[in-house]
Length: 259
Image (cartoon, rainbow, N blue to C red; front, top):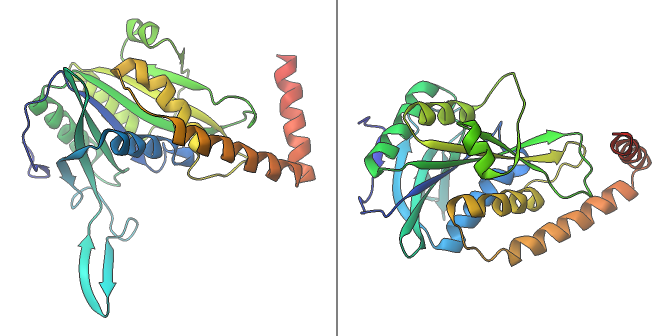
């Protein structure tokens, strides 16, 4: 096992699943990481492990954070990828991993995630992501799926993604986990590129609604639903106040109707 992977505790987990979200390229509107942190809070997750960021981050890009009080340094926090865990039912547990997309050594980073999965005997993994697209802000957020097999795509029941091009750490880690024998499903929320709201609770809500049946989550989504409704109201106000944006939205509606 790599020295970068450090366990704080080694609990006996029951039928564990893993939920992963990465800040950065694959986290439009912070939809994915906001959703993962919402799950952490709702389930009262506690610390489990971390992947030390020393060999994976350029600290001039993703800097450590310092806390100074009355001229005295109280705390220095380095970028890393943290894992917590919580119960999701009488006979199942969930591990939640959240962190920034690393800058270096992606294959080695993915190998650390695989090592954690093997150590905890995790067989099911869900990855969350968000991307910007030409979608109507007033429509429900559409969530699409990337899975390790056609059978899993059918099981998840979402529209499959069709894409060729650059990928982020989400794609690299997902591929490594699939090669290691895990059941891997990626959930992607498509958000309007012309409404820059971050964090975007509408995207987070859509991800969690799609995710719940896959890993058996029972969550109180009311606070997130309220935040999503307020977000939609703000977006409507932004569009109404901008004539060019109003015309662009009209064009999107005409294009959608033509299809």
